[in-house]
Image (cartoon, rainbow, N blue to C red; front, side):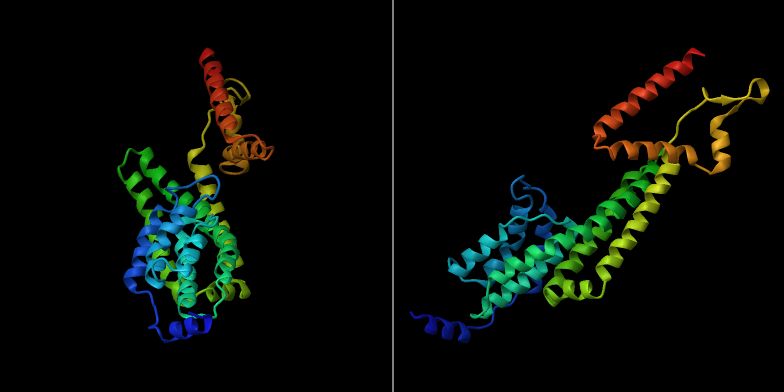
Length: 283
């Protein structure tokens, strides 16, 4: 069969479209995106697994187009899981167009996916890892310190309800608007505004955690004597509430900025705390 005959046959074939059931299947499959993670291509196998329903629906079994689609789905992938469905939705919208348009250049699909992966990962990490996770943790810690079962329950709810809502919205929005949703957001500066707002909320949550959960005893550092002896902490608190906690956090942050691993910072904190406790117990 000639290429011209093939093109005519494809043009006369009924249009292949994805259904709500297919999008729902992609949504559920996206939940295991990180499970088959590898060092070489990271989330590519989980991403490919989520794309299977769409690829099987859009292409003839064993066709060259189907093989190329499976190959594209196994490309390197690194994106925030909660926003992965937005990329999947865009991806399947392009695959659908490729399945119905014989003149469509399928190299565009890989190019669009690669170009959108980075921006989505940046926005997703700001929204999810640096903001939502910190807020959920700070809420859970307050209850957990009191021994309340609401601590872990609220942690799961606060983190997962918005996360699953984003997954559900992402697959539908990505499929409906295709790659235009990202280009329109970028041209209007929405991506930068979202990232900036997310960073502010995340920093506020971190500040609240610093003030609430960092504590140390400085009874060795006393100004004055006898009944007039006053802990240095009290003077620091007069200058600014929670200033000691801020100083401790600032020192740790500065140390990690010198490329010192978090593990060494934690071990150093434990050693210093034990040493300080031993010194205090001698007096």
